[in-house]
Every structure is written in structure tokens, then in C-alpha cells.
Length: 269
Ligand code: PGA
Image 1 (spheres, rainbow, N blue to C red):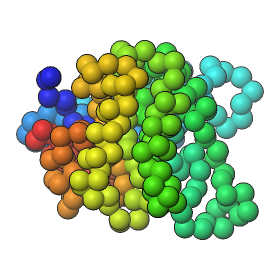
Image 2 (cartoon, protein in one colour; image 1 turned 45 degrees about the vertical axis):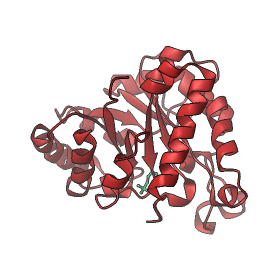
Image 3 (cartoon, rainbow, N blue to C red; image 1 turned 135 degrees about the vertical axis):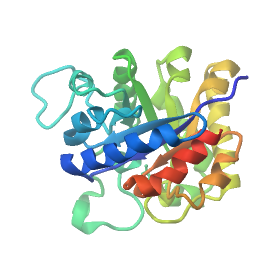
Image 4 (spheres, protein in one colour; image 1 turned 90 degrees about the vertical axis):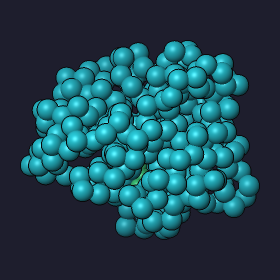
């Protein structure tokens, strides 16, 4: 089995104007040639900043944070794959927990009694990923359990169900080219990182599900990232694990200075 190239993926979420994105990309362009080893760097930026990220002239991939699967039409507020490709996108995030449902700490100012404002589910996530693959872009499928699911002992069952539903209908070649991000919901944006041996256990389980659904070669090829409060301080312990092939990084990706140690550790292999 050849060594998988690690991925350092920034998820800016709802942050950065075009001017801020341009400054960041200039810093990143200067940094990347100084990084020893090989890593793939991807910047998942807000739709409005994607063209700026693509114009930055760095070797980083350009990622949308979501997409709608229809090609065009009366879908106010939505963005198609053609539109993402038009501004230079190479990657698309699909099924981030912040788009599936808001769990955990109550956020009454966000959703009130709705409990959920965006509402992706396994079926829509599958439609989105299928459309991403059909367009020839790289999807990053996010899976992860809530705190309640973990406490109820349902971590593995939840993730296996998300994988089966999310990957349904995709062939082995498509899955081998897809990124899978294991992001425990309770670790996202909380500073509470998943223990490295537990993150490794779940990422190995993810790979095992891919092997069961497809074959060992596909499982050996697919990159499984960890996400949830990854930082320069904890990246080494996580990347040492044999089944963790990089990170999907929110808060610690918002400045190049904080993202740099993660990129450098990913590139070390
Ligand atoms: P975080 O976010 O690194 O800020 O926890 C990760 C993510 O949501 O992708």
C-alpha cells in the first residue's frame, strides 16, 4: 500500500471578506513553497470569497462549503456545481454537521424552537455528493456523532449509517477519490479535541466500513481526516495515527500563522 498524501483542509465557515481572503492567500502562497514534504492544502471558503481564493495563485485547492445538486433553476439562494466550477472550485464540503443540524449547546438566538436552520440529512447529503462526483470535483463527506449519541454508545452505529447513506450509489473509484472527515460534533469549535486513540479507532472504523462496502484497495486509498478543535498543539498526536490522513480545521485555519504548523505536520507524512 502506498503512503496516502495527507490533507490540510481549512474550513473558514462564515468568515472573511474578499479583502481578508486575498491577504490570507498571499501569505499562504508565500508559505507553501517553504513546506518540506508533501501535503494537499484545501481552502473551504464562503461562496463570496471563492474567486479570490482561486485567484491567489497558490497551489491550494479551492473548496465550496456546500452545494445544491440541481444544475440551474428557481432555487433562490442556492449555488450549483457549475457555478462553483466557474469560480475555480476543485473541492466541495458535503454534510458538515453545522449544515445537518445544530445539536449540543442550546442556540436559541440561532434557531429558536426550530432546533435546526439548514436541515441537511443523509438523503440530501447523498444527492449533493453524487452531484459533486458527477461534476468531477472532489467531495469531502463529513460524518460524526453528537454528544448524546456518544453517551448512548451509538458512535459507531451513527457513523456507519451516515457513511452507508452518504456514499450510496457511488462506485469504488469515486469513493477512493473522496475525502471523508470524521468530525465528532461535540469537539467542533469547543476546544475539546477527541483523544487521539479514540479518533484513530473511529477513523479505522470508517476505513473498515469502506472496505466492507467496496474493497480493501479502496479503503487503503481513501483519505480519512479528523476534524474538531485540531490545532498546532494537538496535530502531531493525531497525525501520528495510522488511519488519520489529515485534518479539517475550523478555528485554527483562520490565520496562516495558526494553520502553518498543521500544514507542516501534514506534509511530514
Ligand atoms: P474547529 O472546526 O476546528 O473550529 O473545531 C472544525 C470543523 O467544523 O470543520
